[in-house]
Image (cartoon, rainbow, N blue to C red; front, side, top):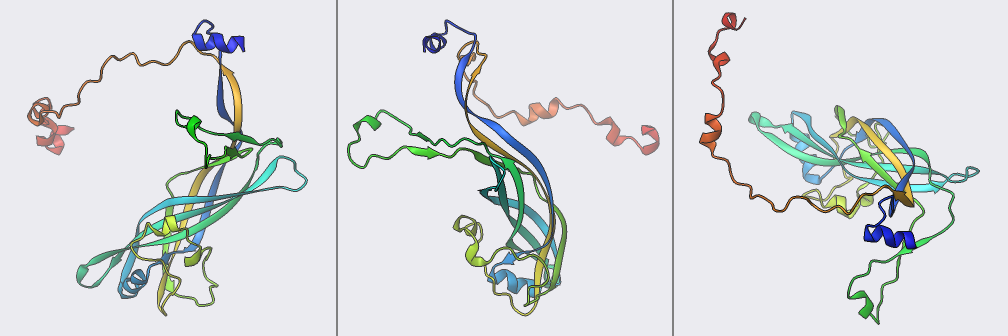
Length: 267
């Protein structure tokens, strides 16, 4: 306790105690998903039937669902199930050279096994401010912290192929992981119209793509780290950012002699 007081006063620079999170386990994943069904809106389905061609314009990960369950007979290890939700934007070729854009949602899943710790304790925390001590009725209980936390970092998906094929009512072709009722509301708001499972007797879309991800588990930890002093900015003021003079910027450029030389003169 006395050493902590000295660290706070700055008299002892050997180390300071911090409350942080340490990495328990981590892995990297490479998942190739083939023919994931792209769920469209009702209007998107109509435009797809009228289009003569389609290409994938953009593909991005909107969110990731994470679930963890302990592994039997392996103390401290968990099977972590990941579900990626991706938004695909298609460019459709219509009549008379007109192009239209439609957007849809698809999903991919994978599972990893990581160490999550063997601790059986539960920690509780609460953020206090100057008004917290005046609360009498309806006081909020401290928030319970889980023993470990899972973090997933996903790179930009690698689009591999777009398949526009006749709809299979039996669902034998492709991967159908989600339905319209299973889409979280926060993701449904990313689309102008509601997503629908109803596919007319016509064409539908399937995407093939690759995903690179880093998955790690972390847990609270109290560490002693080397410290010299409090981090105080050395800059006394902040200069105002002014718009540069475009003519001054142009005058500072070198004359592009190479642009006026022929191919033979450049050599």
